[in-house]
Length: 388
Image 1 (tube, rainbow, N blue to C red):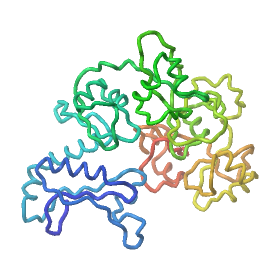
Image 2 (image 1 turned 180 degrees about the horizontal axis):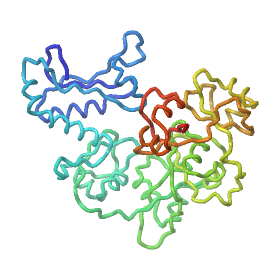
Image 3 (image 1 turned 90 degrees about the horizontal axis):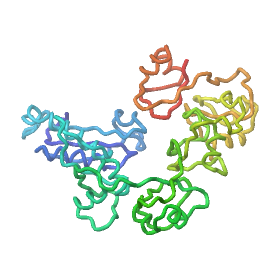
Image 4 (image 1 turned 90 degrees about the vertical axis):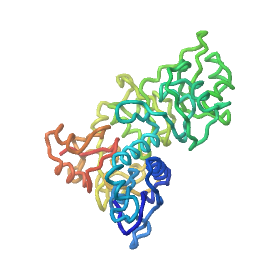
């Protein structure tokens, strides 16, 4: 709640984020009958590069907002609305977050509301239809669309109907592919592929996932790509292999990669079996090191008797900058006992908390915090923890 004699709702958002979520929250709150004032960012006076509010500043990289629903000392309507409308305000925020993230919002009581969805970067009508279990034609009809073209930020009505055209399959682009060769192999046309995937050009890239229309005439079976993983910022072949209990060589072979360099957003097929990859038996014993405060590539290279260039190459590093908690692969060395190579690593999964991880490994939250130099209890999916 706010104070200082104003009236209405405000939202403060982080310097690292844009105002989209804040605007959506205030729009929804306004629909409950509450006045809205502004959405804004506030800088720390002593450091203009940081947020004023610690609750936002200390939650990076999560997208955090501070919502002030009303003024406690309002001379207008706020005090009565606090008593009468607080539940509506809270639910308005839930709906805003669901819409922002593209989830199918269900109002209290279980009745699906008139669903809307805000188009995000990378969306296509097909991907949205699949997410909400409706047909492309139904979305086009509900929104009076005459083509498959949509734009980022566009609001779409999602009709509550059964799918009528969810017969498409997917194909992961391989080295040497073209739209023409893929269309020819799958008994379709380049135009159909371009329209279905909202492609503005005929340019495609290795690892791109394309929707293939099923003509019902047989066609060519889409190759089995098994589990897939979309490369995130900070990923390496080693970290991905560790997460899926496989090896870098197996991933390279599965995806026909010609180097260890990965790009954010790249789609990788994850091999189910590493028996025939030729990876050395001691792969899992490869030394890793968790970067500590004060570390540098120079100090780590000296501790392990390897060169800085070898360290950078093994970890796909393009600069000498390290971050505390970063996991480095140490190439071709044995632990000499004077560094903290962990014997027990755990990769954070969806739904994990420090308490659940501590309970699973029969340790304490404080012990995990201390050994990993954690300053908060916030974890991110894919984060690697040392288990004491």
